[in-house]
Image 1 (tube, one colour):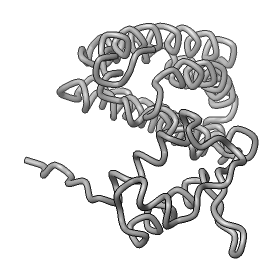
Image 2: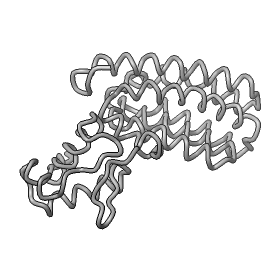
Image 3: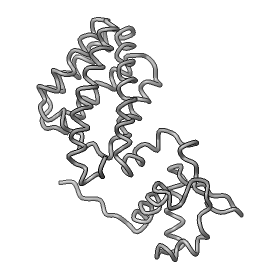
Image 4: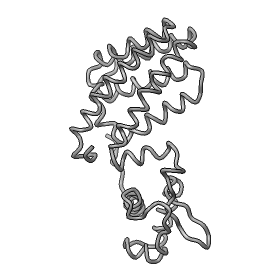
Length: 237
């Protein structure tokens, strides 16, 4: 059995500060109160506060300047896709927007893969598709399915598509357990994905795009339904 992670006081403070920023208690562009006052307000030491600040600076939510103080960064204007997992954890409403991008990017990747994949890439896709059918349990099927999409992105020969695919998967990682619906039946998951791989392997760009759109739309519907049913755990949509 895997040991459960233990939260430290820094973890708790980081989460509290993050929520206070994302809910607007500390608005974008505002300076945070002096460290002494803020530490007293949260009931922690200044050392603990500094550690939490460091994490949020690295995450792109805060910026600290000597002699000026710590300011809440305008993450909506200046932030990157690396913030998405944090934003999804704050509010699953972000998942719908992520899936909109997933549909358009995923369909384009399938079309490009069909045009550019060579023999080795097509063989890899077939093997990874079989791994979806052979996987046992929703989590394992979901992970096997993800590897097919990573391979599709690699087959385009464009490394940016690979990074975009990784970013989208990482974005909904915080709520992945609630999105397992399309993967609870390995045969059904295989059947939904097989037309995409078949079209790519045949070099049929328009067919691959259509198959990917159908796959992404169908799985999105099931996953969002599962997320809605799990709203008691992840927050209402």
